[in-house]
Image (cartoon, rainbow, N blue to C red):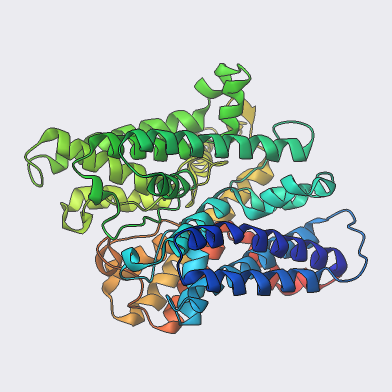
Length: 481
C-alpha cells in the first residue's frame, strides 16, 4: 500500500476544494454578508489541511485498486467534513452531525436537508449548498483528474471506482481526455439550462442555482417550496423537467451524438428502457391524478412530469406534496426510487442497466428450466455481458436490498412509522432526497436523533460509492498484504 501516494492525492483534493470555496466567498462579498468570514476561515483551514497532507516529496506512482478504493472513500469523507465548515462557522447549522449530513447530502447529490427554512440563508451559503451538488454530481475526484494531468495515466483505478455504474469505459484512449469530455458535456448542459431559465424570468443567481442542482440531479432548491414556487410558470416547470430527464442519460451517449454516432444512442437498450419507463410512468400517474387531485388534465400532466422525472433521476424536486396523492401514484414513485436512471449519469439508486441484466438473467434461468443444456448468453446492445459483470450485478442487488431492509428496521426505532423509515432509507441509499410519510416533500430530516442522522449519512455515502467501495475498506482482507 503506497500511503504516501494516498496522502499526496488527498492533499491535492483538499487544495482544490479550498480554491472552489472562493466562489461562494465572492458571492458573500458581493452581497456584503457576514457569511464571508465563515468562508474565509473554511478556506484557511481546508487549505492548511491540504498543505499538511502534501508535505514532503512524494512521487505519485501507479495507483492500484487498493490505493484507489482508499483514496475514493477517504476523499468523499474528508471533502464532506471540510464542506460542512461554512455551515458551522456561519451558525446556520451549529450541530456538527447535522452540518456533516447537509454537506454529504449535497456532495452525494441526495438533496435531503436538515434546514427547516432555507430562504433565510445568506446567498453565499445557498450558493455553496448548490455548488456542492454540482461538484459531487460528476465527482470532485474526476475534476482532480482534469486539473492534474499528471494523474491522467495513473488514475484509471480512481476513475473506475468513482464513476457510477457496473462498468466504467473510457470514451477515448487517454483518461484525462475522457474526463474533460464528460465535464464539457456536464458544463455545457449547465450553461444551456441557465440561459433557458433566464428566458423564463428567473434571475441569474436563481438560474445558476437551479441549473447546478438539476444537471447534478442534486435537487437543492433555494426556496422552501421547491418547484411549487413556479407552479404558474409552465415554461420553467417544463424546462426543469426536461433537463432532469436529460441528466439521467449516460453522458457518454451525448459524446456519441456529437461525433455523429447516432446509432449508438438510438439503439442503446438502457436509454430506450429509461425513456419508455419514464414516459409510461408519467402517463399512468397523470391519469391517476386527473380525476382525484386536479380538475385540469394539463395540471395533472405537469405534476406527473415533475415528480416522475424527479424521482427516477433521484433529483428530489417537488411541485406538490405528493404525500397527499392517491396510493397508486405514490406506489409508482416509490418503485422509481429504487430503479434510478442510466449508468454513466449523475443519478443514484440501482441504475437501469442492472435492472436490464437482472431481467435477462431471470429469462435465462427460465430457459434453463425448459432446456437444461441450452447456452443462453446475456447480451446488452449486441455485446455479451461477461459472467463477472453478471455476478457483480447480482451481488449488488442483494446487498442493496439487504441494506435497505436492515436500515429500515433500525430506523423504525425512531418512531416515524414503517413508511417513513422505509422511504427515508430508500431516499438516502438511492441519493433521492425527499421520501414519503415523515420525510415527505413538506418535511426535513431535522427531526432525527444524532444516531439516526449518522446512519442516514453513512447510507448516502454508501449509495454514492456504489456500496462495494466503502465496504471493501472496512473488510479485514483489504488490510492484509
